[in-house]
Amino acid sequence: WPHAGFSIPLIPVGASVTLSLAAALLAIPRSGIRWLCLPLLVAGVAVLLLLILLISSFYEGFMVQVMQKDPVMPAFSDPWLLFSSGLRYTIIYLLYFLIPMLVVLATIVLAVLPLIGTSVTEGGPTQMEMMVTMLAGFGLAFLLAIILSLFWVTGIVRFARTGSVPEAFNFSEILASLGRIGWGFYIIALLIL
Image 1 (cartoon, one colour):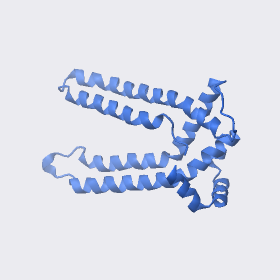
Image 2: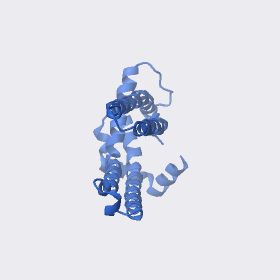
Image 3: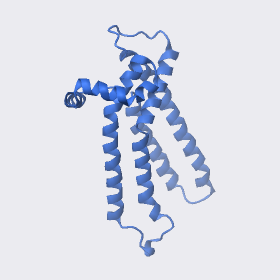
Image 4: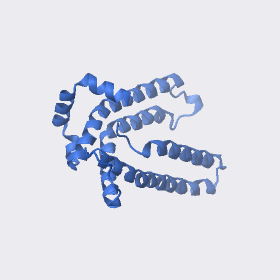
C-alpha cells in the first residue's frame, strides 16, 4: 500500500511540537511578550511543514519509481527526478484527501465557534453537544477518507506508470481497473497490506 512516506511519522511529531509550542505560548503571562511569540509559532509551524514536504518528497519519489512495474530496483541516479515525482505524489495525495481535511476543519470550527464571545454564565453549548458535533464530523471525515483511499491507491499507481498527474484522477479508468481486480479481493488485499 503506497502511503505518504515519511509524512506519516513526521506529522505526529510535528503536531506534538506545535502543541508544545502552543502550550508554552499560553503559559506566558498576558503581556506584550506573549503576542510577540505568536509570529514565531506560526513561522515554526511553516518551517516544520516545509521540512516534512522536502524530506518526504524524496522518499515518495522513490516509491513512484518502485511502482513503475520495473522488476529491477531503481537507482538513485537523478535526485531531482525523485524530488519532482515525490512532489507530484504529495500534490495528488493532498488533492485526494482535501475533502476529509476540510470536513475536519469545518467540524472544529462548528464545535468551537459557539464558544467564542460567550462567557461561562451565558450558557454556550454543552460538552455533550460539542462532543456529538466532533464525533459526527470526524466520523464523516474518516468514512470519506476510507472511500477516497480506495481510489487513491489505484490512482497513484496509474500516476506512477504513466507519469501523468491527471491519470491519478481518471476515475472511469480507476473504476474499470477495480472492476477487473474485483472489489472484494481489492479491499481484502488492502486490509492485509
